[in-house]
Image (cartoon, rainbow, N blue to C red; front, side, top):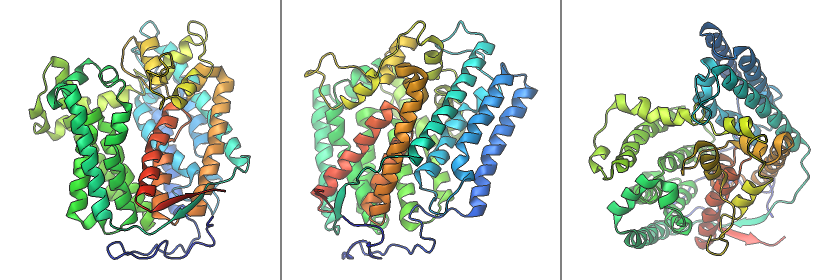
Length: 490
């Protein structure tokens, strides 16, 4: 088993088409050093966010502002702890810091709830704005308690062993990756034949993707191999970004990915992963690239959302793929649905309102569902469903999945002790993940695996467990198949 101290400057022998050398690490931090000025800027952002929400809440007389704003300041203060109590071995990609940075995405969506209050909630129409404000405040307090438990778990984590891995030089990726993309495309074409063709498959989204795509888990695992193969190529070969063949494979993989599942977020997620891997590999920040991905993401959300929404009318309007305007992309259609999932359609609020009074606890059923996800339902007809679907059916009366959030799911399972235990266990996992990265962090494939796992498993929810496993397993399988990774026994 290799260790950080024993890793060579060049992580693997230079191949004829993939020659590159790992940039030096003068600061000694494998997580990419965070300059003091950058840390001050990040802390300043969190403070400005909290102050802006507080001032706007007071100016607009937001419902229950006297409860929401102190709770928000409490949560923000706890969220900033890794940046306040900073250590030299931390960095931008350290789990404690990266988790805080990624929380900005959720905070941006939730800002209207803090600054202006909720006038209504889709699943709590009988609740007054003041009552909704009390629920928002309670959720913030639980999130703060969960974060404290997370830090405790990280600090006092048992010293679990790390896996013994061997990384080898990459070779012939210009042949292997296109072969995987071709295989995934053929699998997708066979899948479409069983669905009655592409138009019939896309049209079925109008009945709800959770219903029309039920039981297709293994098909999508096979078709997603194309995206994973392209990500591996990009990570281990520095010249991949300059290869037209790479981009042809990458675009084909993204098209197959969207047309298979209809997920717009999956495409944006893949683009973000590429930028993050580049940053970790080159040990540089890329704010311009991230901004470009953000703009591209808004465009894709609007354009692909229009295509998906056209299926609700009983037909597929392919012309929406070319009918685009900037105003429409940044308007309510592109952003309203995303913001609503953390405000007026927040799945955690009805859980806090109705559990355990009207709705009983799950007692671990949602976590069991995550572990049982790979088991086909025909072999286990009564296996529990994932928590998103349960939230949709129980509280919203819809067939679609509604995210419960980590706090909501943990509370639904075991109340406050469930929140504390789930977050503490997650802290232990993140500590172990950081140890694995310290051992193999100079290996490009490990960089990719680390980024994908920590991005998906950014909070202690069953969705995070499923997402982390689904993102990691194809990388392991393809890494072994490509001869880059070898799993060794202890």
